[in-house]
Image (cartoon, rainbow, N blue to C red; front, side):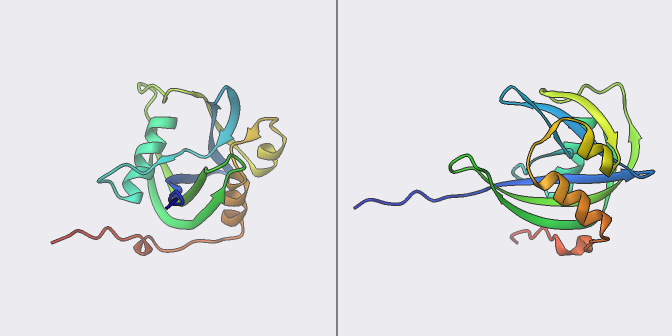
Length: 154
């Protein structure tokens, strides 16, 4: 009897941080190609979605952030076979940058870009979620953080 492999998308988080009309992005090398993304990464065991978002932003940008809302949950199937993502994007405030920290491996630059600059910068977006998140934010989409609950087994 042949079993079909179980497909499990990667669970990721991202921070949509806006300051004075510009959004926080990272230019990173992925499989040798320079791509643009929000500060984002994988959820690790024993951390909440919000904790993961704060950690990823700090590791990738040196910025301490404070999530204020859930922008949305996004499902994306990569053109690469078997690669899919369930991404939780959080709106966050920029609190402080710590230039003494080093950036994660692969991160080449931290950028603040307006939406028009995002479209004209010449760097490929890591996925369609990059622009979708900005557009949802600009449209005013926000959900309370209480939608994300950490449930502990008694």
